[in-house]
Image (cartoon, rainbow, N blue to C red):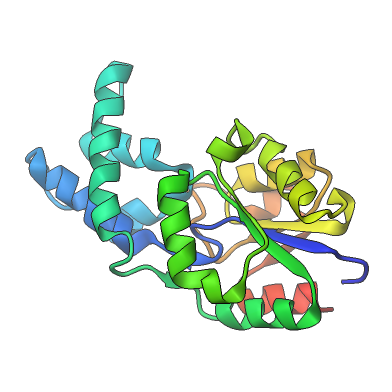
Length: 220
């Protein structure tokens, strides 16, 4: 892809397969409150929707007051912090893709809705050697995706024109955020696609079914 200056990635479901660690956290929370264990796929389809969605699912909190939901969300996050590096791995092909990006001289970074406390820990563990140019979390931007603020802040930090930048994510709000920022968007169709959704309906310029396809799109 010609004239690209910067590539921004979502984190969970795009760069990293974090679902197994979220499954551990959700099932520990369920066990604590006398719920039976759930299956990986039940968690996997909710990971990109964040901790609130996982908490509501874990303890069936529909209709509960917000204070109770927030209390249990904090419980889940505390558990997740203790296991977030246990089984998480980069998706197959991601490390090779980042190597190619660095060799090409392109800048790359991460824009995620994951709280900074967790994102910083995880990104440092898996990607410090690949030298991301930025890590933008909701605390940095003041708003969560689909707001474009995080992406625009990332482009500003790395001194790149949004129209010459790419955003890659596995949720429709990622594509919405990218389009709101006037960036080129790629849907990571190998990621945590919510139940009943189809990436082909999100309006992304490209769809990648694997990190290898991302590589082909970016370096075509």
